[in-house]
View 1 (cartoon, rainbow, N blue to C red):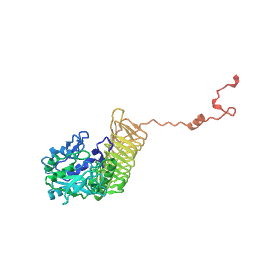
View 2 (cartoon, rainbow, N blue to C red):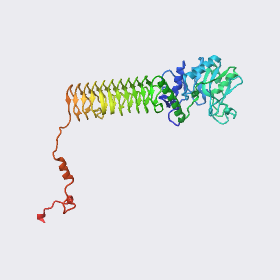
View 3 (tube, rainbow, N blue to C red):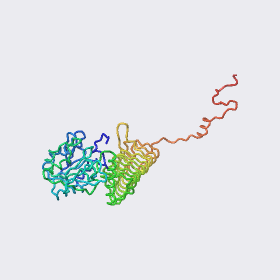
View 4 (tube, rainbow, N blue to C red):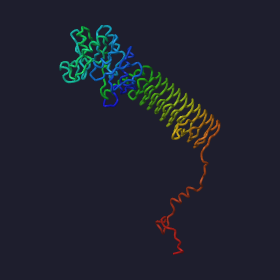
Length: 464
């Protein structure tokens, strides 16, 4: 991956890569989920609750990785082994493996797929009776013969094992391969030597074979997962106007009859209520949007947008912004850590930070809360039905009472009582004739006898 981030922690549609495999296992009904990692790129804490961990001390291959989890495997009935870098795996595919093992009674079921281009995959070698004899790796020249390389059935890297038989076979796996590693597929011929059956289950979903080893594959996996997410939402009643220009993370919730317009991105734990319209060109990050709201050409992060709220265009809602029912944050409005009351309007060109604003208030253009004194943040309180005129600055901490007004261009540094008009500006003074006087100063007439009139010193001719 050419990255300082461990491969399995690269994100896909809002989740670390490995969490897709973990989620599929849980959805399929796994009683325990064990993740094997190395001592350097530890994954503990990245996958949340309900996951156990095992450490593979040295990178000695996939068989050794599974053997690292032997304490968790002991006592189990069936063990399913998944790859952490195959995020397109689904619970349905896992269930296919489990059903095949239950029906066949085999010691192992291996998931396979028929690929037109099997390059890079291990080839499945079947016996005359159709059961699996072995898997031939193809990572390095010499691993497989020329004839084996023409086989199109490949190992998908998914297995369902009898737990006891698996642990016994793992102790006998050797390193007779070009890379000198302990390969998990090498347990299959060992199981056959124990007179146990190994069967292949051709998977119904070929995407399950898709693994990630570079950022090109990461982008392709993201595109496939995004299509799945879009289809789930659209089948549930959501309108996505142009899926190709829309990004929606896996954990985003959208109610029926919502509309997501082009070039919009919904991330994290965002939620959109019924009838709301998001976009075009809007970004929601961990933001909740109520019913019948609109968010147009805007960026929101960790904000709460209520029912029938209007946001944008070109609004910026920062963490802690709460807009109650029917309120508005209009053009070029920025709100941070503030509670905006129901029906309150902030139409344009305003910054509201660390404030509590009541209901049915109108904050005029360029209303600003000066919340930071250079050392500490302070809160501003604005009551209900307040009307601030254009270019009002509220210097926190300050309170504007219910039904109060402010005069245009005021810098409010003291509390405004309820029902009062707060004016804080210098009295206007008009200077008559200013334009003519300025013209005479800047462009005086030139003396015909002296082209450089303005540079000549004052001279009394009577003294010459």
